[in-house]
Image 1 (cartoon, rainbow, N blue to C red):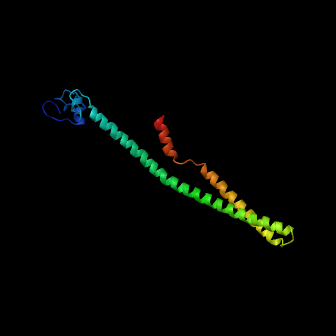
Image 2: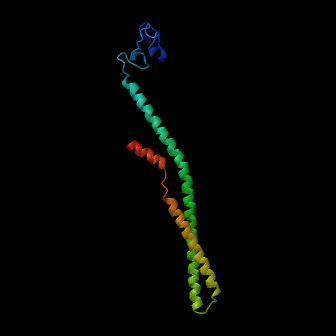
Length: 159
């Protein structure tokens, strides 16, 4: 707004016949919203802008963290399933191996037939191989980092 009370738009203040009586001059900084007579924004306006920029930044980071949390939840679910399967398989393998050792001792003493020993040994070896496969799959999945995009953004922010 100028001294006469007229308000100029951006197109009018960019120069030309309409701005300031056709002189082609752009209006001074006093015509911008929030400007003080000396053309500067006040400290309160700057603090508000800084605060709102900080909040927008935090909201963006929070949104990214929420998205990655959902992805990490799925990833951790798979890790838990693989880990649980590996532990159960290894426990079963240990039990069958312990039974195999017991029957082997009995077989060596001629107290039981050797067929059951081979069945238990085969079952034990199957579960050992299954447990090792699941443990290997778990180890490969553990190598995947959680929250990669959030970490990258935080590293960029700190740099």
